[in-house]
Amino acid sequence: MVKRLDESGSGPHSSAARKARESMSEASHDESKWWTWVLRTGTESDPDKKLAIFEQALQRLPNSPELHGGYADFLADRWPDDDRAEAMYERALELQPDDAGFIRNYADFLAAHQQDYDRAEAMYRRALELEPDDAGFIGNYGNFLAEKKQDYDRAEAMYERALELQPDDALIIRNYAYFLAALRRDYDRAEAMYERALELDPDDALIPGNYAEFLAAQRQDYDRAETMYERALELNPDDANVNVNLGYLLLVNGRREALEQVVGCIRKAVQLSHCMPSQTLAEALFYDCLRFELAANSVGKSVGRLKALFEEGYERGIWDFSAFFDRHLSELPEERRDFYVALGAAVLDVAKVIELEKFTLWDKIESIDPYTI
Image (tube, rainbow, N blue to C red; front, side, top):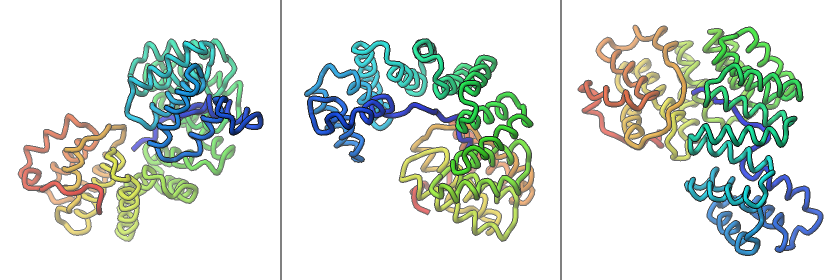
């Protein structure tokens, strides 16, 4: 699965937590101070307990914009209550209408959770007026324009502006590289950007992971892509997406001796799913179907696992299985080739799941636990 553009300088509790850290020395245990409560939420990992702390804090300090903003970030990120999150953002901005941090987090929320792109853009512009030289936020606005508005000219202008302000920001450079590769098809500039990001931040696992996707998909340089995926996993072995993508790359390469390594990648990704449905998990199970078919010339249990996952549902993203089918479709049993192509299409598009019903094999398969392999 393609790892999407990532935000910089924002996220859950970013505005409130930053202010809280700045105020720590003043009164870290004084419950009449909002930062005391934000710091408490930051040390609590249990979502239910964190929720209770925010509720208690707002009873104690009902007019704190920082607590409303921090609570909104928490609800948006960790709690399935978008209406309540939106109400908290609105209240924070009633109390402190010119806080650029609240505004940009609200913009991110409106874009990601409510798909209200017009209101989101109005918020992004408002935040930019307040903080016109915040490179991280300008880069995030570029991400929004590229992915949500498909306004590539303005998106590129934002990336360029962000890099004028902060030319050595590896995250902005990586996002710009992704934009250049996926949306501009300017592969030479994209590769130069990925190389630059690697030099600037060699310990960020996201950079070699994204670069590997580029090398495999755009350059068909599978050996260098494999090296980059392995480098990403050295830095962060618990990235499910990178484990899955490496497994796919090994399948595409088709080395029989690598099939055991594919199994390891798949099992790791299933384990890291933590029993949550996702396209990353679906891809892992699909690769297990293909791996088993290549190794045993028969249908594996992961077809049943995929059937159960389709029934549960998950959010689809961008990926492409054509590299595998171009190389290995002829190696699959002729009577099941069309089935595996259709199964891959269903992994990527919920509307394609119904097309599996035309295969007798699919009707006979029983759904089994997709989280155990």
